[in-house]
View 1 (cartoon, each protein chain N blue to C red):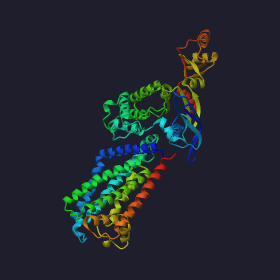
View 2 (tube, rainbow over the protein chains, first blue to last red):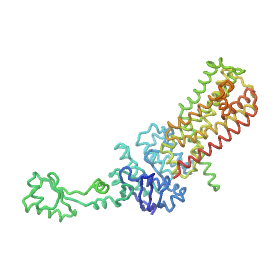
View 3 (cartoon, helix red, strand yellow):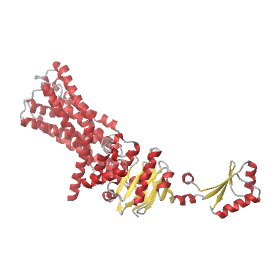
View 4 (cartoon, helix red, strand yellow):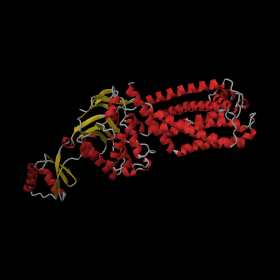
Amino acid sequence: MIVEATGLRKSYGATEVLSGVDLRVPEGSVHALLGPNGAGKTTTVRILTTLTRPDDGRATIAGYDVLREPAQVRGVISLTGQYAAVDEDQTGRENLVMVGRLMHLGRPAARRRTGDLLERFGLTDAMDRRVKTYSGGMRRRLDLAMSLIARPRVIFLDEPTTGLDPASRSTMWEVIGELVRDGTTILLTTQYLEEADRLADRIVLLDHGRIVATGTADELKTQIGGERIELRFADEVQLLKATGVLDGVADELVLNIPSDGTAAHLHHVLDVLRDNGLQPERVSSHRPTLDDVFLALTA
Amino acid sequence: MSHHGVAAAFSDTATMIDRSVRLSRRNVETLFVSILLPLLMMCLFVYVFGGAISTGTEYINYVVPGILLLTTGYGASSTAMVVADDMHSGMIDRLRSLPIRSFAVLTGHVTASIARNSVSTAIVVLASLAMGFRPSANAGEWLAAIGLLLLYVLALSWLAAGLGVIAKSVESASTLSFFMLFLPYLSSAFVQPETMPSWLRPISEHQPITPVIETVRSFLIGAPLGNNGWTALAWCCGLLLFSFTLATSLYRRRTSR
């Protein structure tokens, strides 16, 4: 496990923001910490990146203890925070070279790596412009590029696309997707289910400082009740009749029937309908979305 | 600290100095104001009030050392704002999550402050010469005056850095550093303390700026030095020690986990 945390607790005054968080992230995987505002996502990331001291619990990154060996931890991680941490009055290139030098890459290596990253993040044309002329999306990309300059083993992305317009968001997703394909270990936080679904192979659902569920997107969806068959009828009479012969929940003109997702079950439902002379207007099969999971587990 | 650690600390500090100097150079507005304001004050005092103020010497010769200290005050106070900006912009988190020496960030800003102040002070000196300032100093006295001013700027910049660290925002950093700009007015910068009301005179005579100004005055225009030199040196060293300790320990506290 490249990231391992047990029993992390943190309070600010009387408010407990983390009440015992455990986390295990294997090397090369992408974990998403998903949760609403105030769930404790950022605090967790700040503890793992040595910026905040937990009140209790312990955490290691690549075997280094975040409390006892912060310098070693900082040598193998990178953090891209919620607010683009870039110098407005430096150019994109200068920002990158600066971080490269602070990571002790040596000037030539820092320059070379800067060139590669500018290209990869589509910033080559803008590299000699001051960052204050950049768009929000460009700033985030530069910020991420700065995080990657020393090839960190674990990348922390704290809400990487919050506040971005849809086009910049999807560019950012492509960029992060590439990192994922490179096999970099990533721990990202997000309040967007779509983002977690799309980028992460494991989702950790956080609410009020506690982990309420962990698993792949599919596992989480199954966990809250699995699939259902939706039958839409033309009128109330048919709906009532169907409610009499099938187990389900009626909602307006729709009857929702819990299902195990197999063809056999669908056959059975259709047979029952036919035997009773019922003809729904539409039949569809639904898997719960992460939204359903989110609402069910954090309600 | 290992040998490697020392080398790394130097390299980190050099990188942060590069950054701060570059940011200062590009913040032309701030630099411009920190030069323009003292120049305007100098014109105001020399041409408007000067005729009415009697100091027993050509007024411009009396006032220039005070204007120089006013200049450094303006220059150093902007350090509080750049430091506060770093503390609140997310930059500090990025820098702290890197394996760098703890207060290289502050050292960078303080060094840039000294560079800025050297430029603005040099410009103000040139302008004062053009306006009729006639110092009697020889090379050694110039060097002594410059040395003392540098020490004073260094102390003041660390103080400003400390204020920048505790300030809740860039705006409050600017408010906190206001007294640095105000103190020279209560010193012997513009009028002789003897002319002040009796309750104000002790404040004026015993605050750090007066002995520094008197010492610079003595070096540049040959005013009597008395024990001002040692008093000034003691104030500057004391202020430097205090400010440096304050700034670095506040920084450690603010950024500790």
